[in-house]
Image (cartoon, rainbow, N blue to C red):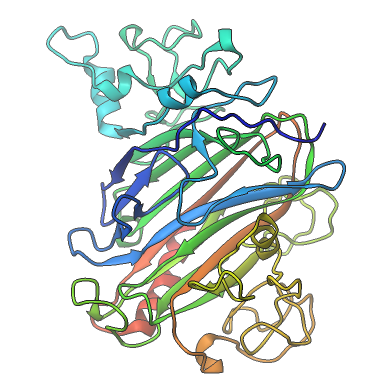
Length: 466
């Protein structure tokens, strides 16, 4: 059977921590939901940190592909932690149970300096090993069918067993000599594991285990304004998936929610949102309004999935086709609006809606088209509102000259509560295969300018991140 078994006794994730080492304070939950306080429904991606201003209200992700019988398997969410559940799943059967979900319903927040200190002091009787190092989820319960090795760790005595009292520790690249394998990234990292079979009553689940890292660095202005998200996706099912897409769904809300625009930069591979006005004050109270100098926020895939070999497409837009190890840059950028689930411009209401958005297809089954509001035109494209970033008309429209710069500004579109979807694909995800996808969230605020100069600053910041 191509269906994936679902468990009934896993509870939704309920824990969180803040990524807060640099100029961003971002709330990270132990499920798939990012940047939102689910208990209060409030925004929780603060930039600049300590300002009380937020540039993202909520985020999540979706992933889907076709099995050998051409059935769609899709797991994804928007605001809620309803599709993914805590913990790993069994290697042979792609199942889990409540005791495992409960044990992994947490996040492990760790700073690089803590590990550096551990390496120096772990044998010192006056040193207390931090709880996060002691409880590091290095191993699964092999007796119950889970993988032996989960979170990356440095095995000091090469015995295959994680034991901090032997000098083992979470595997940051402390000396730059790692030859291969997983590591923990950033100067601060939040690590957790989720799956799409716990309590997912849909046979459309993929049977995947996802090892998550949210991390950030201390550095120059651009890196200080950026956070990163690494998804290590492991297909534990017996299905080989083709036409697979991974999407980041984001409801930015640059301060107030009612006055935003969306767009993308095709050459940079970044989707972004920015305030439609030079002053942010529409549709919210004074505590949420940013006022003058509204910032901009963007999503850029630092590492996309491996492209399908022989597809004859320059997927990473480097001028080469089908080179060894070619990975997808941003493949699709779509936008939609709040509270319109029955509308073709609204949030996805079904798995098929979500999957089609990943491919640049509206909810009525028609393709995104160049110009206007992106619907009902004559030239299909995969990038909404690219402005002047693809004037050769090559990447979005396959070489068809569809006109000049296209943006919400050039079209005079009414500002509103925009959501955006940044997708990469198609790629293959075969049974037992692992794929790693990483994206960056970049923010920029021009303290001497307006909404448009913040957007230009965002693009320049993206250049330094890449």
